[in-house]
Length: 84
Image (cartoon, rainbow, N blue to C red; front, side, top):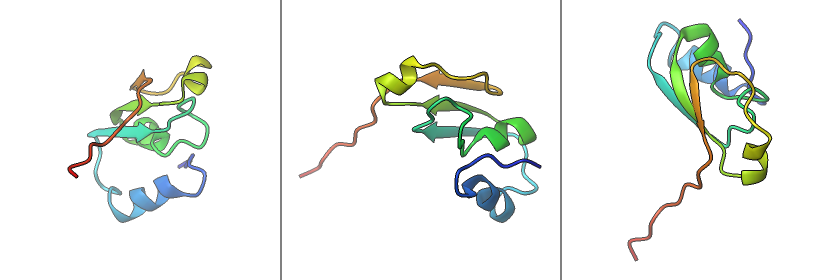
């Protein structure tokens, strides 16, 4: 198995939560090109999951996503609302 995240986040999640679970979906925020240091590429490639890659930086999004398995891509800024 090949893990792709920068600091082993995908390996940690896989080994502690989803080792025997296949299928399902994922969302990755700040996805850059969809491959470099991806926290979700492993789950798409190795476990057949589909997902959404979100890159809010228009300059990074304009560079384009590399071909990733079963992922839709979008450029959006995520913003919460205040209840104050």
